[in-house]
Image (cartoon, rainbow over the protein chains, first blue to last red):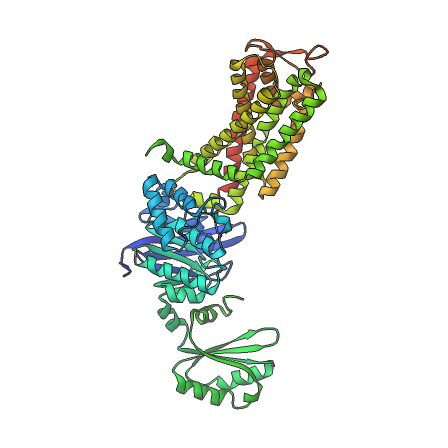
Length: 323
Length: 261
């Protein structure tokens, strides 16, 4: 069982990082509890990696501070690096070293005696399905390299683990495997900070999520809280070829009381209307009856789904995460 | 914690494994020195070539520039440097580990050149002690080359550019120093390889001592035109030490400046 308690292990206070005129991180404040899996969700370029680079003491903030287990990132780097494991977005392994050599090297940097490091490396590599590979890491598949990247961050049993896009570029099967590993880690009393732009990943793994956009935290809470607060129960997506048809539906649904909001997505050939609404199937039927009364024949495509963090992001920013 | 578990030693062991497993690179760098050695040996004949061989040894150690430049540039661009920065290692150990591994590799390359020159080609030398001093001078010069390599890696955006800058630096400098071929010009005194080659040559070939004067980088031997300069061998040694220290310090400062944000 995950053992989240109320003691705050990371407190971020008004953290800012400017690169010339660009505010990559703009006044971020957060409190992360011990044992929690906390996701920082945002599109590419939102400031996630800059934030994690400051928290892991690689980057010096322009202003603000973060306290990690009682140590300031401004003055306590020596102590912080003993507590944190970092799995960077890029696969950073030594390609001509074998898997166990890579892991043992990181262990040695953390002062773990050789014998203990060997045993720990063997155990972790077995757990992550890389045991027995005697060839150089450059010959591994992308999925294996990414798992090795993760094992290297875990070998010294860190108190806090930073995972920056750990499933980027993985196929669905390998992605699920990494998710299972992350779920297992939650049971080991490790505080995990997950940087991701994958809504499903954040939704399914996180205890709490902070949504970041243009360097600012625009919302935070549990996935359920966020969906309740900034979304609705369900979403209906209706696509047309013509913008006029979409406008008709928009007018038709204007005064329906259970419709929370609607937003448009314009792709090359399709105009899609996303209608967030409260209630279940009954309301869906009403919505279809009233909304599509005039132009049901013009509908190109239609999807009904439960509200997701994508909808939360859309409602908060007016655009989709991947746009 | 025992000596082998020290971070700098571990980094150094990792670097050596990395370099030995990229054996093509080692063959490539050593290959040129071996090729020049054989070429000059057969072209000049053994009697004259003994004055050229010190330049070949110095040429070999100058390859430390490329090796260090590529190695640091790879760490910088691959994200490995940032990863190491999130570990309780410290840049001090990173630089120390790199210096140790580069010194090991340079020593290995000099040994191979010694086997080729003094073993296979039977080039004459004054004595084992003189050869040992020569080895030390070559290694010291090699370390100064590593310093230049670190400077280059700080400036280069990619390992490929680092490699190109290193080649662009050390090939002309070896010619300008008179290490590969005698060069009668005062330019030689501004090039680090001249001092290393000249001291090495005078100690191992002529059997000179620390108080003997250094000569210009011209031809030695019966038809030679080399003139003494007003700096003794010990002064030249101090100049190599100063170059080495300066390059290492400048390299570390520049690399730190370019990679700390």
